Length: 69
Image (cartoon, rainbow, N blue to C red):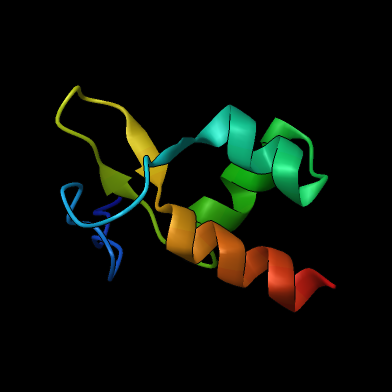
């Protein structure tokens, strides 16, 4: 099993709502399989939300979108 490193901005109380993988892939213009591939290669930081879902912080997603442009 691949161990995930928490995102730098993983404190949910101080950050905007985290983004699901499906939504994050859509914002980046990627299909979900490409997105998962980038996560597995640790190119997209993720963390485990309290409700048990791996998510991307809004801050990290904003940085990825800015890099893409």
